[in-house]
Length: 75
Image (cartoon, rainbow, N blue to C red):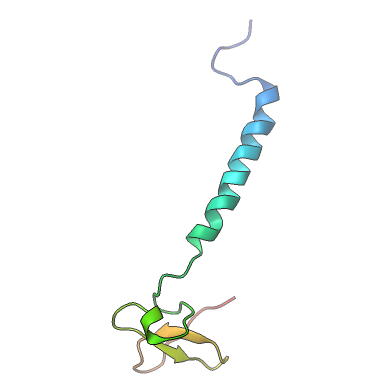
């Protein structure tokens, strides 16, 4: 007699596929920049209050404090 709370094996692949698709759909939303320090920018208005859009040594434009050196870890 099968247990009532154990999903049947035929439903597991569908659940795994659904969970994988959900994770893929959420990933881009989590990776959006919000103007915080080291986020990419074009103008100062792209950055949060207190940060300015600065050109870094790799010629990328990112939000930084504008005072002293800001080090950003980039991929």
